[in-house]
Length: 272
Image (tube, rainbow, N blue to C red):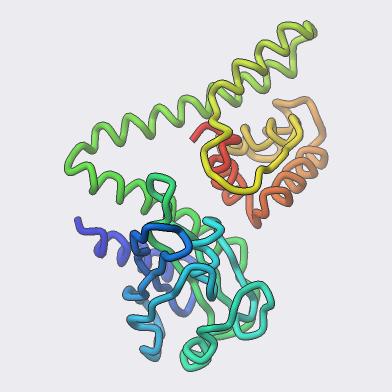
């Protein structure tokens, strides 16, 4: 299946699952330097006036350009008024009648290759579910693009995914075990072993410093554990676990647990 077909399938699922009035996407150019990258908006599902079709969005400008530059999801409640982005494309957005919008990068080989958008024709805040749907589809698209580029070597991709899941599970168990032993030397050795499973240099950019408890909570969240399960495994209260998760999300700039796990993986804080 072509990358265009993969993107269109993702947009259809985004529109159907999140309820946004317009889902759209652009592929990122392979420029010599990140600052010269741009994406061309060519794929749309939903209500559009056609003003966005074919628009080239430069790195650093507008919502998509900011996403290319920071390589992380960004959402705005009112595109035309927010101070968090440049407004080079306001006339086009106004023509489309769009207000609230979220965009998520699709990253392959540590480089953004596409940006997925979800937009509303109102300034109602982009909800956590919409953000989760966009982030989930971006991650699935990353894997599908990798699979399509290895020309049929799907088994290798599957094995890589399974290995990452096993590493994530081992990492989480080591963190819990390190917290449960009374021997300080053994606890330190377990922590050292767990840290060999992550790559702190995965993505260039500002470093994020999490406490060991915040790392513990994220490691278990990556396994799909609920707050109650995390609290039980770590021997802490549910509200305390929620507090650690909230603090970790704040440091990572994440709006949801899923986004926090994705960003932590990209920052080399979790096996990925």
